[in-house]
Every structure is written in structure tokens, then in C-alpha cells.
Amino acid sequence: MNMKKHSFRKICLCVFLFAFLCSISLNIYHYRRRLVSFFAVFSMPLNASGSIFDEENAWYCAPFLLIAYAGGGINGLSYLNSEEAIRSSIEAGAKVIEIDVSLTADGVPVLSHDFMPDHEIMFEQRPTLAEFLSNPLPGNQTPLTFDAFIEKFGGWEGNFLIDTKMHDELAVAYWLEEHCPAEVRNRFIFQIGSKRLLEELSRKKIFSFLHYNGKTIERLEQMLPLLRKYNVHTVSISDDAITGKDSLENLCGAGLHVYVFTVNHRRRMDYVLKAGASGVFTDRLLVE
Image (tube, rainbow, N blue to C red; front, side, top):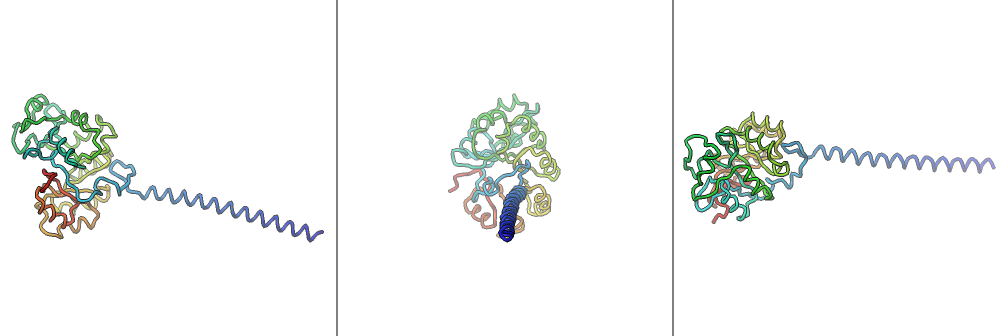
């Protein structure tokens, strides 16, 4: 009888120990999954606004990208930033359109490249909003305020790369933060060209994407530590800086996506592609 009791206790003890170990293993499994999920989330890349995004599907991961420059060329004209030019670029299949933004004398953001469409000087100094709107662009095309631009194109699913002119970067950025809906602003790529702006706008986290215009290879290479620090993935460079097939080797090797401006001919596009560029700014989306 004592032997049976002893055996029964041993069986109960074994069952208890087995259940206890299973419980510990299950808890460790769930804890491990949570721990892995925690570190997986915090190891994902952050964009300029500090939010997590899928880097593999970011705008700059498209194959060789043609960025419509200043709204895109139309009817042989360029630098227009007009309603017609932007609409034409969208119809031509653009995925990213660069627009230039300047402030009028009375502080209203409008789409304009230094108030010099198609390199034609329209105003000797900053115009007022009324002056800007009362002067048709070359080709009798329609000038846009930023409010009108949002109203007409805010629902487009592509991305707009915003280049501010006449040292208006911070003023335009803060205006966009205050007046532009977040769901639209999150599709903006805000171009900057100085260390001060990079630090300021990275800290403010107004935009999902910052894009650095380095112009020269040497300048970009000097900025590499800061670009890494603030998680800036894309830069632009002048076509004049591409002097050989290995010109972009260091920048591309550092993980940057390099876009070259302004390239309008197929042969040159092929050349900068072989040099490692991820795309070009162009006036001609439909290149022959």
C-alpha cells in the first residue's frame, strides 16, 4: 500500500513538474515573440517625421525615375510650375513632380521659380499676390498659389518634391505645417540645401521625407555623416558633376539615392544611369 502511495506521489509530482515546465516554456515563447517584435519595430527605419515606414516601398525605391522638373516642360517651355504643366506631367505618367515655391511680397506661397518662368524675368522684385496672378505665364498658362495647387492636385497619389526659392525655406515649411493637411503633406518631399535647414527641419518633423540638394559630389561627401544621422536617403546633384562612370561610387556606396538635374536627352540619361544615378530631373518625361 505504501509503495502504491509513493508511486502515485511520484506520478503527481512528475505531472506537476511537466505542467510547470510547459507553462514556463509557453511564457518564454510569448515573451520572446514580444521581445523580437519590440526590437523589430525599433530597428525599422524612421523617416524625417519620425514615423516608421516601409523603406522598400518608399518613393525613391522605384526603378530609374524621371522627376518632372518645375512642374514639367510643356509646349517647348520650361520652369513654368503652371497648372497646365503639372496636369500634363501627371497625364504623361509622372510619379514624382518637382515644384518651385516662392513667397510673394505680401507673404503668400505661390508656385514660381524665382519669378522667372522659362528663364524670362517677369518681375524685377518680388511681386504682390495680385501682381503675380494678373500676369499670365509664357504660353498664356495659369499661375498657381499653393492653396490653388492643393485644391487641384492634393488628391493625386504621386509625390511632389518641393524646392523653395529666394531663401524662403523655413517660412514655406512652417506655412505648410499650419495650412496643409497632414495626409497631403506626408506625400511631400521637402528639398533642403544647408546643414542648418537639415538640422532644423529634422528636429521639427514636419515632413515625411527630406531631400538634400548638394549640387557637387564634394559637398555631398562632406555631408554624409549628417545625412546618415538624420536618415536622409535621397540627394540631388548637378549634371555637370558627373564626369565619369565612377563619379557617384562613394555616394551610392553609402546607400544614397542620387538624382541628377537637369537631363533632357536619352544618351545622357543612359550615361548617368551607368554612373549609378537613381534618376534624373527632366523637362521631358517623354524622351525619344
